[in-house]
Image (cartoon, rainbow, N blue to C red; front, side):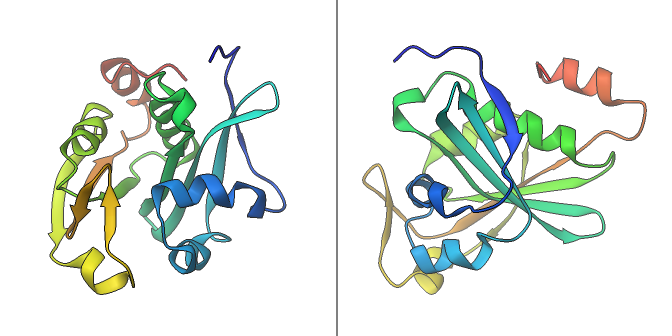
Length: 170
């Protein structure tokens, strides 16, 4: 499916219209509703078509977590997820630590986050088993643990060198 220029904007107002896309990345509605109205929700659009979303929440004064990153399957492998991460980084203060959690059993997702500049941080054993009422599967792979990856954004003045090194196009 052909797309024209992609623009990223922060969602203002209702977020419920994006719930179906958010549920593609996190299949438990109750879990998504816990963070749906928190933090910042970035939306990738081409014309009026929603291509993907990224929802991040503050953890503390120096940290944020990407709770949900979802791209419409029709637009996978076109740089939409990477562009959303770049936009999220651009909206956060210098020196911020950005976390993202994913199932380590799904290796390609871990590799994607590492290619965006994240590094493995720690694992919560049994996370999906303990926090979800139904088994969670990603492309047929049973998700059990949660691997957290982290990226520390550059300090003031280092942004251009950092983003150039990561091949970011902001």
